[in-house]
Every structure is written in structure tokens, then in C-alpha cells.
Length: 254
Ligand code: F6R
Image 1 (cartoon, rainbow, N blue to C red):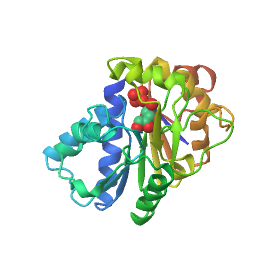
Image 2 (image 1 turned 90 degrees about the vertical axis):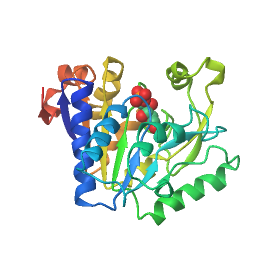
Image 3 (image 1 turned 135 degrees about the horizontal axis):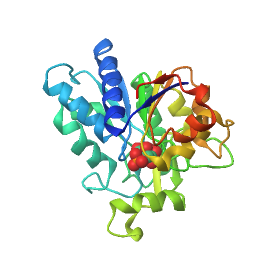
Image 4 (image 1 turned 60 degrees about the horizontal axis):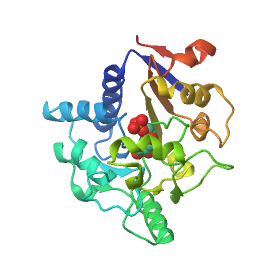
């Protein structure tokens, strides 16, 4: 695992933007695995800037998002489909038919999960998967559990994730209680992983992900098994790792 320590959110976004732009440059028809949430918004802004300057094009790219709330329509402004349009897709030249996201409106979980795995397979797998990390160590919506999940599945969100997501909804009652998510095996299938973290509330998860044992109680710890995983964390998010296991930080940019 390569761990890059950066100053703040802006530097994290800049470094991540450069890595994704490099991926798109060396393989214009690459498959990008994308994430939602607060963390990647700055990275998407960097990519939009690079596109507008004519440095990169997404015309041949394909994308597959990590997850989507269950029972929500793409027109709902809290859906991840809406988020992706709003924060990236509508600002660059990606073809709408090249973007993929689980269909939160399909009530048949088995059918939807099989369909999504098939989509990823047909794309030839994900070249670079962008990830955020939950305060509790979740990746995608793979929450702490007794065992690691495998392929795309329907998941009940934990109380802590529902609480964390309440900030985006008018009230806690409106936060969806289920989601479709790529499984940990699906995520680990990507050629390269790029996990971003910013802020003090991620410090414990970053420390345990990088330095702790690989265990399903800390889903992100499984990334230690990936041959090409890069973590970019800002000062606040890396504070505990820096205190307790500084030797695991590979590159310091701040
Ligand atoms: C989003 C996702 C989640 C988030 C995580 C962090 O597609 O899969 O795992 O990456 O919850 O969220 P933020 O970035 O809002 O702190």
C-alpha cells in the first residue's frame, strides 16, 4: 500500500486529479470506478478543470460507480446517479451511455446485483477505482461485519452510516436504509485503487486500515491485499497513523 500524506483537502484533490488524469491519458478508453460523498468532489472539480483546459477527454472512458441507494430514483437529488451528473458527468464529454451505476429502483436485488456484476465483466473490469472511506472503515457500502462481502449485493446501512448521511437529507427518516454496493471482491478486482481521506473523523479508520490487522470489522483493511493501492490522506486524516506508525507513510507532500 502506498500512503501519501498531503496538507489538506485541496492538495488531496489536486494529487488525486493528477493520478486520474494520468490514467485517462495513458489509456483513453479506460474504465473508471467512481465514488460519491464529500471526499471526491474536489477531485471531480480538478478533472473538470483539466477537461476544460483541453488536457484530458473522457469521450472514450467508461465508468462504473460503487453504489446507489435502494428505492431511490435517478431524478432524486440525493441519488448517487444525480450526484455524478451534477458533480462530473454533465461537465465533461463522457457519453451518458458509457456511465454505469446500480439501479436503485430495481426491487429485485438478485437480478440487479447479477446485472451489475455482468456490466463490470463486460467492461473488462475496472482499471482505476476511486474510493472514500467511512468513519467506521466502510468502502462502498461494505459495512463492518462478521465476514468480508464478495460481489455486488444489497446491504442494510448501519446506524453510524445513516447518521453520517443525515446531513444530506431534510431529516433522518428520509435517509434510505438500504443500498446496492459493489462487494469487496468486486472492488479488489480493480487494476488500481485510489482511496482518499480528509479530516479528523477519518483518522481512526485510516490508522486501522493501513496499520491494523486485515479483518471484516474494518472493511478497508482488505486493501492491504491489493497489489496497487494508493491512499492519499490529509494531515488531519493521517494524524493517528503518523503518531503510531509513521514508517507506513510512503510519501510526504506537506
Ligand atoms: C460513496 C461511498 C462511501 C463513501 C464514504 C465516505 O460512493 O461508497 O463509501 O466514500 O462513506 O463518505 P464521505 O466522502 O462523504 O466522507
